[in-house]
Image (tube, rainbow, N blue to C red):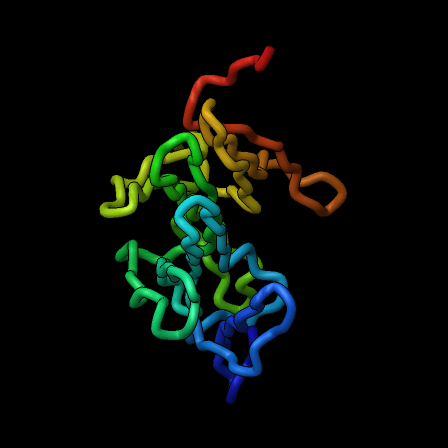
Length: 195
């Protein structure tokens, strides 16, 4: 990502396995330039279909998605699609490779609180939705109902037992001047022990 005249822009460059191309491709503009803001962009590569999936949150809190098919030049990227009408603060992608083609899971944060003087103090509810290659499912609440202090989510790739989600939740207590945090787990499927 680069800042050009105060505006954050995300660029990509093609690697052919040996050399990097000399041409930069603009993938997103109007990106946040605040240091330390929560995870605002994520990409995953589906090895079977050879598709790169990209989700990102722009500087206005808009949640966007696009993808690229081989050979991954500028013209191979889909047009950006805005996924939600409300402000968001984080985007994390994962794949369900047990489906053919693989389904894309997007975990995002719906902004409940935002400190405009310091965007690092932005938090809200966490939701997940699935893309089957043609349509997006409706978002489903992942964080505990009624909680809004949820940060730094992460997901694993699903191989057949569900997507595992870890995130931090504010416990509503302050100790030694710092908020107390709980580590939370959620899953799209039943946890199972693999023999």
